[in-house]
Length: 164
Image 1 (cartoon, one colour):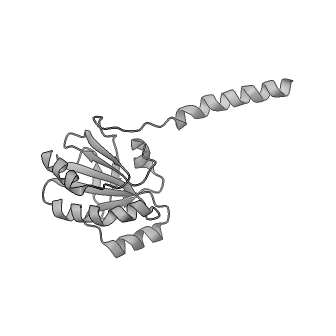
Image 2: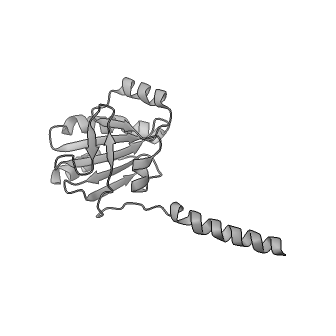
């Protein structure tokens, strides 16, 4: 009987310690974007506050994610077409395999800033667990829109970004 009691007490203690770390905050539109500071593959330092009053299109993706690969060409075209219009596109990959990640970038030559975050530090701040996931953040650091899965309407995205 005392073993059952001891197991119950240990289980309760474990839950009390672990639960707060499991409770994940998921960022939604009309909230402030979580603070982050990263250095892109090209060496540019980007924070949520230093993209110069521009709109930030923040995309979380991975090379092992088929929908991410499907979305990538359209996101690349969007970035190329809007690079001079006050829009910063940042792709954060959660790839753990650096070789596959670098090979993919060499083959695709993205028109936007990228970085690999294998420990998923940035996407954890956003509560991202589905890939791809894209956030539109206005020049004041406010999340305007969130796309879960493939952005399937880039004309809508372009219209939204231009309105900001």
